[in-house]
Image 1 (cartoon, one colour):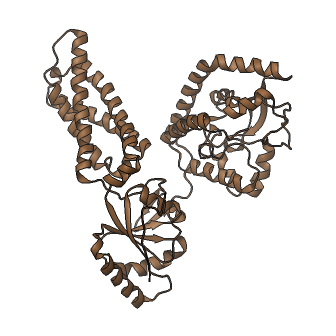
Image 2 (cartoon, one colour):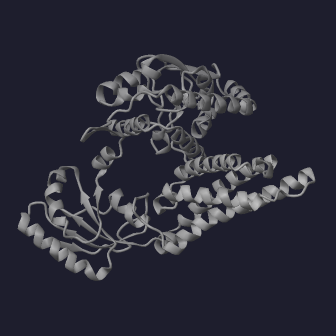
Image 3 (tube, one colour):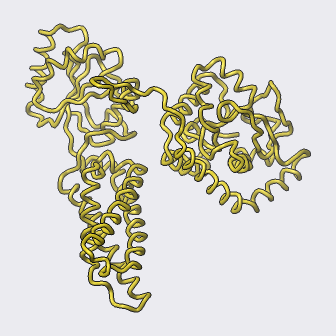
Length: 477
């Protein structure tokens, strides 16, 4: 059995993991911060509204604030809002904060009705409180992200000593091991049990693991398992029962992807979903409302910019300002995509050459438009028409569709959702030219993941990251 130490310099921080816990005093501080913020927001709302209507503040302010505060933190606690891995997930935190906040206000209204005390509550104060409190809780989540995102905080506020077990030597540059240090898991020892050992050898090794880990005050054990090692897990689990602490499996990407999927209980077994059904009517309505609302607002705000760009294109080179090209949309249905013309050519046939760095076909103004992604803005019209969505797999020219469809097995899966102005692949760095099949396969992998894991919150996250990508990264040309 090989034994290895796992120091603080072995990995670099990357993402989030489950199971880490805050120091108890700091967790109490986080909960208290929510509770006190709600009380302060209610008091501020009461004073603000009473000042507007020139009346005395309602006497139930403190009582109502206490009820909402207590209900909010109780629901949040039992939903795992204050767990460390959740504190670092900003989108999840924002979603939960809004939902629990609305639920807490609803409970206040129901309680006031049942207790016949609605006369003691000011409707104006409640409305102001709902807005101010919601904004305050959202702002506090951003503050948590900044405070807990520092390496100092993760090293000082999270306390989780673990022993890592594996059946073979490990590559500690893999994401799953980088995640551990990022989220405060202190891996004090690493033991390699060996995959070709018999029962007696495993039994002896596990006794040695327990003896050598006893002085380290270990909180739990992590068992790093790869897909091809799964058949040995039940047999090894029988021997791991001797370990007195909790044991968690740290899977590779293949296992993690499988266990993270939705499942359907079928009597004593389960059926795991490997392909999600099409979006429901309500989900399609959600996505369409978001598309129309933001696209319409963006077109109104950006009209001066769009007109200016159109004039500059006409002055820079001969040809139309808008370039139209055939693309495939939802279920492979063809449509005409709109873009600002950035080249001296307008290819729309069965042979189309991708733009490359220092491409001679790109015009002077076109180079700037492509670098800033302004050339894509006319696609807001495609979004309003329903050909596209704000977020989805980016559509490719028909010539490229036909080419990649024959080479990449999952390529057709991209057409299970409307193409987007931006997408999950683009915000993860796969934007611009794809000169090799490997790069296109990676882009398709991200597109397929998006289709399988769609949610309205994921769309909002991608839009926010798109704005950051356009401002600070320059991959397109």
